[in-house]
Amino acid sequence: MIKLVLPFFIILMISSCSMLGGPDGYFPDKKYDFLKEEIEDTISLPDELDSPDIENHYPVPEILEIDTNLEIPKPRQIFASAGDSSVQLRRLGELMWIYIETLPSTSWPISKNYWDTSSYDVTKADPLSGEIDIDYDQTSKLLMRVEHGIKEASTEIFLFKVNKISTEIESDPEFIQAEMEKMLNYYAESLSTFSGTSLAAQNLNEMKKASIFSENGKTVIALDLNFDRAWSSVSKALDAAEVVTNDRDRSKGIFFVSFAKEEERRFFGLFGGKNLNDSSQNLIFSEDAQFEITITPKENKSYVRATSKDGNIEKSEELLSKINESLS
Image 1 (cartoon, rainbow, N blue to C red):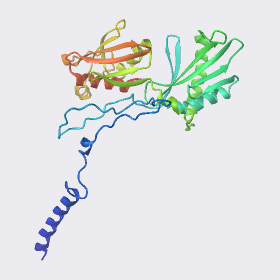
Image 2 (image 1 turned 90 degrees about the vertical axis):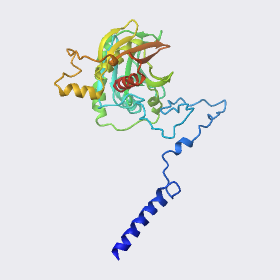
Image 3 (image 1 turned 180 degrees about the horizontal axis):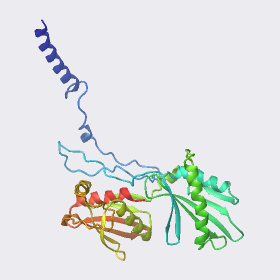
Image 4 (image 1 turned 30 degrees about the vertical axis):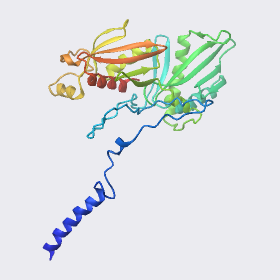
């Protein structure tokens, strides 16, 4: 009896699976349904409304022909990734800023509370622009700016001494550094106990200093920075990404670099190779591992592009993504 029932049971199970998951079943496979979707026209807004200024992280490419066996690629890294939480005082020439690995909407209430509890009077605090005006003396005021950083979910805090009459920034690096060191300690202590966020300052979270776009099929990193800061940031990112800089021409905004993929770095490590962060190391890379990184300033922004010496776009994209992940 069991021998007769078992084949029948197996046949019933197979047919049931087909009825449930087959093309005509109750639960058909839907993984290729997206190929049938159509792109609708852009929504027409009334003249009195502005289009939302939001970065499109997932742009839809124009595809003329669709392969039925289309392999869906891994999404590109579209922003600099966040790492461990930290608070740092950074400097480039006379420009100083506090770097915090948290969203501006979280940094804003801490910043405002710092000045509200200080001996100075706050004359203006605008969460939309991220600016706080502080009355300093009869001739000068302090201006703090809370801005989104280069890295995702990061904040940059700037402090300036401004002449009340001319509204020009006064150069006083020693005073600014002393004040920012006090603020640095306050942020470090507050972040460990503060977990709130300001709804009024949510707008600051969208004002990112790094974004990407496609240009003639190639990815470009757009930095909302002047050339000096962009050059410094990319230089630090190359070191952090373990990319070897063979030469550089600052006047032309070019880095000549070599880049080994992660698998190749592990391969060298198996044979006792030094860490790529060691500046004394001189690894021999093949010809197809040579790249040019260019920084082009235009209209108060800087644009970062990568070009492979052998014209391989895929390798250039991988290198640029690695740099983008390491920007801060």
